[in-house]
Length: 236
Length: 236
Image 1 (tube, rainbow over the protein chains, first blue to last red):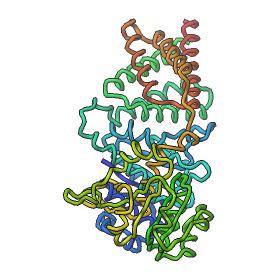
Image 2: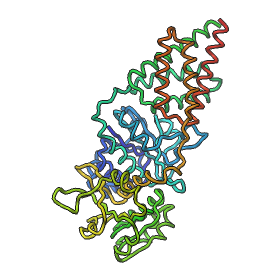
Image 3: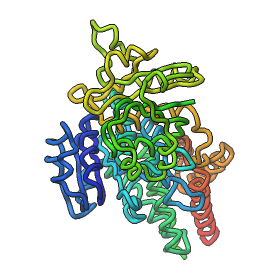
Image 4: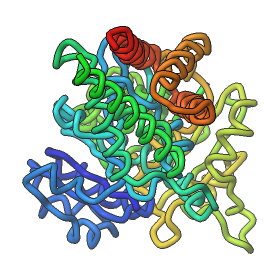
């Protein structure tokens, strides 16, 4: 299941064209968070995506728009910065080929034409995906970015039918993340380092496509580490 | 060398956005045949593709626009018809992967928003390429189609120059695995469980495609955990 989430979309033409593109590439749901663009005007540009746009869910909060999916994907043309833990993006091709086909449901976030997604919004996502375009000018118009991303995913949807190992549920991955944060708190000297470790674990868990089985073994490993660290504290 | 040829383009927004997209994906030349759209108006939508659009060649004939290239490619959303010799298209992916990389220079023709390329125009091309989209509604907006096509071609050329995150080296991943095994030894009660954890970590590290930065943060995390566990052991 693919859900496209537009955050603060500003242009009516873009909004209309994006709705059309969603239909072209079989997107299931469209959520529009705090739109600046006029939805009525956008209908003029949606062509046969008009009905799809009329059925879009308009919300006031990102929370509501990312509820109920297995994976939340942020997108940005600023995908990579050596020193910035938040901007360690996966290339679109990698995402489409390796991660997406093993995910049951995904929400893909696209930001404002002017400023993209905020750091806070990117931080809410499980993973950051980028379109590696011309380094001299990598900034695509948002409806172009949507087209490119949806095309890549569309190409790989046939794999849904393929018999692949069952992937760990979002709930289980959430437990793993909590455990890793608990461990971090025991061993890190500052809250900043705990937060950095949290992002690392979130990214790693999202990228590693753990099977149910693998996730259970990791849960046991983290539980043992946490228990040992706590026991030792009591002994002191 | 890639040349984009727009035949009878009607919308100024589309024209501007296409010019921008050409720059995003490193297109060399833009030819505009008998445009209906206003080029002046289109400049407003080209963002940093403005200069590229100003340098576009406007012609009155398709002949001029397809001169001097090794291969002429027509595009259409009506790619295939069993009985129609003209509509025996190659899928975009096939074209990008198998044909395009062996071609020195190519002109790619995109048609009018309303009616696409005429049969005569398609007949002038060496090959017809189609984007295999949703059979229920495969008709993309032209600037979306351009984005998807250019992205596919881009993937098969300049990608090496792009600023993609440096992946962690095999050596660094080896260090991470050793650290994880050390930790496992501190917390697991049997060698069998240590061995099982080792496999988990090896798989997870292989699948997670960690960047150099992420791997260094994880190394620090594992080192802290190991140190804490060891110190606590000494205290006992």
